[in-house]
Figure (cartoon, rainbow, N blue to C red):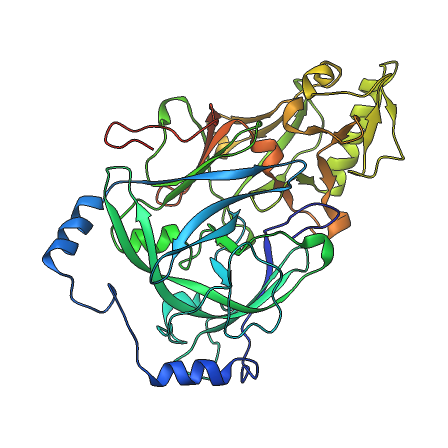
Length: 436
């Protein structure tokens, strides 16, 4: 989902839809009458399955991811879901909670997908289930059908999905070598609203936000992994995401997770903006880390301060504004086309977000030039930091993929901390107990 070639995964509105599901009621009704086919949840485990669950507990899960900031514009992961398990490509989004697939329920409005539409199970999540409640706008929501959880999610770029919450089987490989079929909830999205600019050739979204419905929260509730999610995005493309303790904490900087923005996003702050090692006078910035956005967004004050500082810094440098390049709002050209960031980063200074941490030792999130610039297909250098007020983010400052490149980013929901550290994100790390 994109705005001017920018995908925003941050959920701004979540509303329950008390509908008769005219497009899908016959399908869901017939399936519901046939009964449920629960595999692991609500069904006694075999001794072998119980042992495997015990063996997997406390381990981690690591997924390779694919894509880049530019020109692809998003990162995706492959998950195997259903009976039998089938592969689906999902957009990785730490800015939203729910994992969902475009769904043949039948589908009222779906975009083109790399794989056949997901055929939903008949294991419905009840309307008053805590997972369903997590997706509703308030605690006192009402149910059109007590046996069915209906939801609608609207994203910041006006993309939306209407669907029903189901349980189905995920085939997961743990880092200690155990493979499990785990029954987890996911959304069956049968009515999507999107603009041509927000189209991705994907099967759905992997929501990794802080809510109860996120996959890592569900896995944690079954005792399989710690409630920790992280990622490592490579500037060369690709990288990996992980659930659990698949990271080295010795070289990490940490800041507390803030309770702003409904408590379901990975928020931190307040932070101060530093340019080239000098204070800018811009502070009190609330920050959200969001892999659903390719680019970084500052509020109006921070954005215009940055533009002013860049204009001063680039004065008398061999760079001129390139208004004909519409790749991003601000681009510059040189005497000849640039081929890589390495040719031009010497003209730009690093940015830093300095987190006060409640009076304790400050944490500094470094954003070097290569983490806020791209080279367009016209050979110009473009600024990958945009004005959030122009896309409805108001005072939200959103750290997107571009500014998290070549760092391991950790969201520890148990300790309520966000951590980061420089890392080699080229390929999935190897563990002593398993090879990838």
